[in-house]
Image: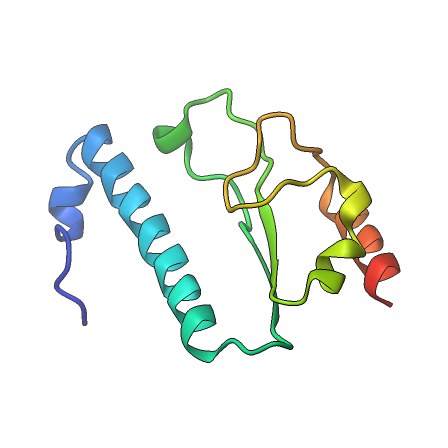
Length: 115
């Protein structure tokens, strides 16, 4: 069991502590994924990662959308060329003007691009 960070009874005392713990969990998750890609990725590696839901309103407020970012990582530029018309940009942080689609639309676009 990890001893990093505050125990739950401390982390959940204030909304600021909750937001900090949530932010730290995202940093940890992305750092672990990036470390894996850097360590084990080869020329054929393609990774698609995305959020599965928005955080609790205590983290993002009551008016936050349910949109989650999707990232495709590939060393071979041909992989990303297949989705060049999607209007995405490089990097892990989506532009505020990035396209937004329901998951079923992403699924259909993804399968069409790579089938």
